[in-house]
Each structure stands twice: as structure tokens, then as C-alpha cells.
Image 1 (cartoon, rainbow, N blue to C red):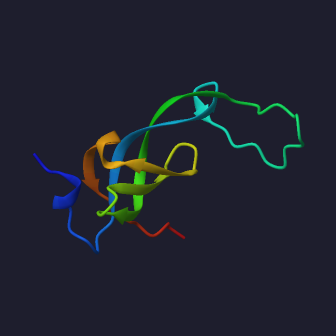
Image 2: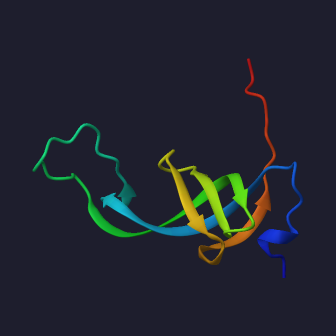
Length: 94
């Protein structure tokens, strides 16, 4: 079974991951410019997504992933990732 350390550097990889974040209808939500005392629109919960790995920190065993659904970036532990797959980038048709 492959581990994150088996994935070669210099190529793009995606992974399934889980993280705790603010959710609204099951989708991560970010609040911008909240005033003191203003309520966040989301509720804390566990989210599972599919993300493209941007940064790999082997020493601390952390990944920075870009979630394909919410288009947000999350920092997640190696232990919270599974199912790695190489990303194939395609140029959009003109």
C-alpha cells in the first residue's frame, strides 16, 4: 500500500482528506470581515474532501491541500489523508 512518502516529488497528486472546519449545509464556509461579537455563518464540523496537494511537509507530516469542491486551502495531517492519485492537468479547449 502506498504512503504519502512514496509519492514522487515534482508531480501533482490529489488525496482524499478530512478536517474540522466551519460548515454550512455540509460545505466549508469562510467568514470575511466579521465584527466583534458577530456570529460566524457556519457551524464547526468534520469535512471530507478531495484535494490537490500543494505543499508537503515531511518533517511535521502535514499537507497543504486545495479542496476541489469548496476551492479553499486546508492544512491537514498525513494521518487524515488516504487514496492518493496522480493529477493529470489538461489545457482548456479554445
